[in-house]
Image (tube, rainbow, N blue to C red; front, top):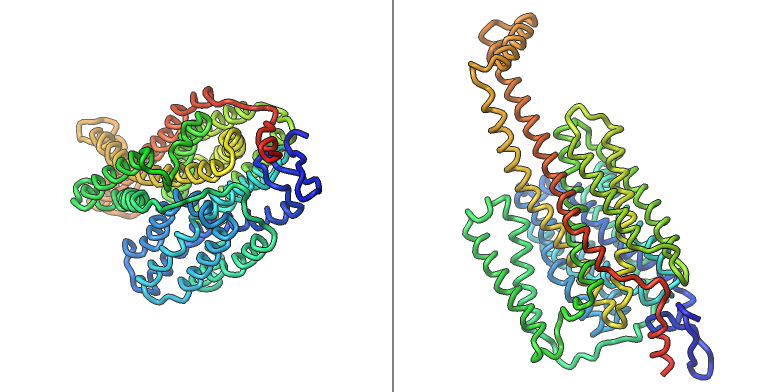
Amino acid sequence: MTASNLAAKNGRRVVLTDTGEELSPYRWIILVGLITTAILEVLDTTIVNVSLPQMAGNVGATTEEISWVATGYILSNVIVLPLTAWLASRFGRKRYLVSSIILFISASFMCGTSRTLGEIVLWRIVQGAGGAAFISTVQATIREIFPREQQGTVQAIYVMGVIIAPTLGPTIGGWITDNYTWPWIFFVNVPIGIVAALIIGLFLTEAKHKMQIEKVDWLGISLLAVGLGSLQYVLEEGNRNNWFDDPVITRLTILSAIALIAMVIWELSPRNTSPVVNFRVTRNRDLSAALILFLILGFGLYGGVFLYPLFAQNVLGFTATLTGLVLMPGGIATGIAAMFCGRMLNGKVMRADPRIFIWTGLTLFIYSMWSLAHLTPQSGEPAVRLALIIRGLGLGLLFTPINLVAFNSLKGVEIAQGASLLNLCRQLGGSFGIAILSTYLDNMERFHATMLSTHLYPENPYFQSRLTMLQHYLMTRGHDAVQAHKMALALISYTVQSQAATMAFNNAFLLIGISTLCVSPLVLIMRVRRKPSTNAAAEAMH
């Protein structure tokens, strides 16, 4: 056999996966628990964001203060994320994943029972530390417990869950907030988490490949925590505090740079025999290309999710409900594209080169950004929905083949290490995306408002013609000449601001498209093995 192989164990013949693990008859049941766990993490963030205004009113917090409910979660999540491969290897993937789920749902319950802002932020930090294990460990486990010929299908199912869930998050969160109270945003995690923990605890076995760790890399952990913690704080709070005009932001930026550079040097040092983050795995060019692609896709995915609701409601005049409904077909398109992609890449021999899907996905995604960059306040719902459907199709064609190519030549503990780095890049890409795009949006709006205002001077015949027309119209509606003149100027000023905002959003969507275009050539250096390797099985036989 090729993708799944036969070996002898205690006098009986067993089937092994490519990673050398015994093929579990319960793997599809385990998949339900794993995907439920992954969805729990990605869904939680978007659900909570909807309830922040109500939460702020109940605990007496300002808008800036309540944002720490989201920031605290992301800070701990991004610090623990690179450690997940190391923790799973040290304690075992099953023990680590089940413990993380229990930590997550316990913190969720405590968040729901909290009555002060400090309590909520504290338990959100704990919750983020637990949730950090979910995506990377789930992704690595799926790669390890399923044979090569089933990877296309299971990766597609996984992608459907983690991409569609954030789309449904605001709708679910809004419904819970409107019909119940904000604590139920956290309480709903508890029964779902218990089911996932029971499935994984009962059916998942420990990985065959377990790293023997003689000592703990405390220096690496410390540098990682300081570096990523400082960086994430800068990205979250920089725009709000006017970036480097704030001395705290400046100091933390310098601290982050020093700590992260020192960490990379130490982790690659021959003296470090037990690195907490194995950067040596990035010597694999397929993984390195996938890491950069995931960084930019995180930038585009989270940046787009950040931009679209603001654009739809502030420029196009959509209601919050309509904004969510227009997003939904794009999520469905992602699911359809992911399943088609998984079907084509499934089996002992892939039916198509995954790089074709990556090229197609990148093309569709870039085109969707170009379409969004040409929308105006007069654009109707159909035009917006079409652009988002194209975006969804592009995303659905990207994640499954990139994952397959990235993990193609990784073995044993390298799979978990690669998964943690991929998800760290996705998370950091999202943080960079939101920080960069929010600043870029503000700056471009001011720039366009200034440029458009230069045309508003008395000697400009077009300006005078427009002003006179508006003034006469307002006078026919019963206003006197002075009042009509002031109102006409106000209307022109509003039009300028609206046009400036539209142009700024157009520029921001275009920036996402150009960034994606710039990294597209990386697909050329990716290698593809259409036929699975039998190395893992051969190793397992000896």
